[in-house]
Length: 166
Image 1 (cartoon, rainbow, N blue to C red):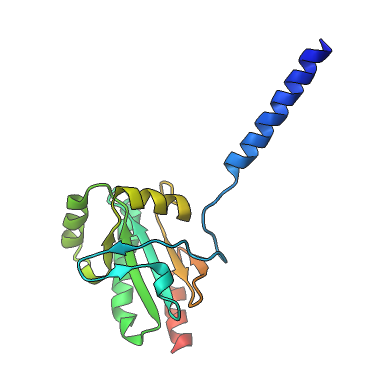
Image 2: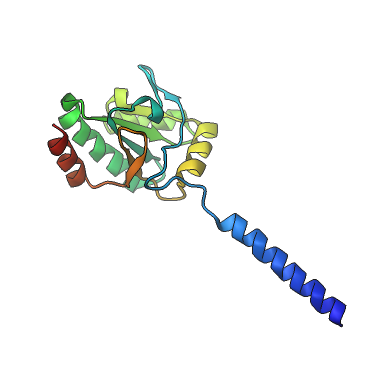
């Protein structure tokens, strides 16, 4: 009986340790260095770590998440108004599996090609894991030193940033 009790206690302890490791998040958060990745569109390659010296807004979106599409379009319109200040860079990263659907949405929503990037399946999975994207998509603001300073920043905060930096 005592031997069985010891085995049960050991198993419960082992499960607790295993569960603790699985539940720890490896996703990027505020204050972390932005995880690196490279993604190309027809005009250029975007990598968050290549924009040091500028603030960089990176929006992640998918055709499956209507709110992320709306947010990416709003961020895009906002960026078009402020891009001449050279204070902030912008990239919208699509995480769909179907490139045809991505291109159709970019055309249909009249999104500017120069800020839109299609990640593809493998890179999209990596980005979801490193940025902690599950279900709801969002955006990160990266400071000139490459650190995440905001998650899903409000457009009013971004406008205040452009005013204070100019």
